[in-house]
Length: 139
Image 1 (tube, rainbow, N blue to C red):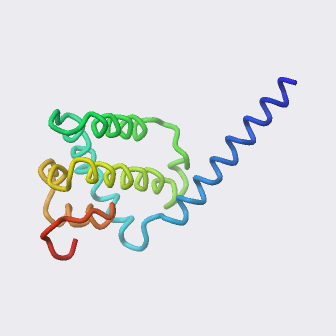
Image 2: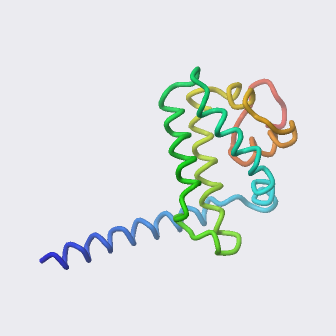
């Protein structure tokens, strides 16, 4: 009886993991965007920390950012990091989705105000995460 429950739970978890893996493969950054994401990592981590510490942002946004940082710090990932190319794609995709949510709730201006890098870096971040700045061409 117990082994059937454990096998069922294991099969369900495996099916969910496979579905997430397929989704990540389908929506991964294309071409040079993935390389840009890797170069932006130090600025991106500072951005996440600054946004999470900003008390003017809605609490839900700060909680999502804290959970994202905890996920990024965990040694276990959906896709192990030692796999070439795709190993870091899950992290990049989860960061992109979280940033889209932050922009929807807090606005692009909040993200821009906390960006520690260059304007070109922010433009690359905006392209990677699908962020849209109002009043700016090309983003």
